[in-house]
Length: 243
Ligand code: SF4
Ligand code: SF4
Ligand code: FES
Image (cartoon, rainbow, N blue to C red; front, side):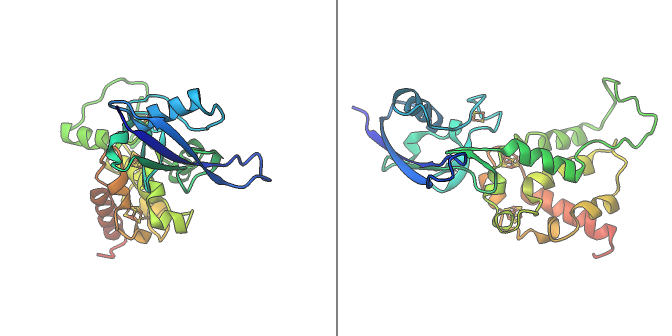
């Protein structure tokens, strides 16, 4: 006989400001291989159709199901309920994002604004570059490094785990550093370290980062945030002859 899980879930609808945020408790029978995502679907189908949370892929690819599970920002679809030995699972929405309702937050708006602020797009070094050309030779090691940065699924876990981002909402944070590093690495991009210095060379950028690496501890794609932050600091410091 499988055990009964207890879920304590944050409930609040910002469209109903007269109501107060609350924690609602649910019980559910655990099944073999159950993830928090599967449990949430069962709760919504069988007990409470008003429960709000997001998902698309169910496979750790889209980043939509990120939430705070027993205090850690992570993906609900990649988290087994069996990880929690006492069977009590507390779910909160990711802090640092606009709340849509219950466990659903608007990470898309945040990521779009961040990309625009950081100009996270290719600025071709050759003005005559044919942007429609399908292939261009590239050093395989460089292609691998760029691909590594592009594994980010914009889930927002690193933002929620970052104390600096929680204290200062203008802080670029690890997901932003990853976006900048991707183009700083790319030899097709015309921008120099000086240009990036003007985007992330202050206390809202890499020099405001406390390097406690909550971002690295929570990134579900295991991106090398420590290495990226060090790389960007070195590049920007040299560009300004700080080092
Ligand atoms: S290392 Fe920097 S970006 Fe990562 S969590 Fe800490 S302050 Fe935030
Ligand atoms: S860097 Fe990692 S934690 Fe941050 S948004 Fe990308 S995948 Fe999520
Ligand atoms: S549903 Fe896509 S990452 Fe979890």
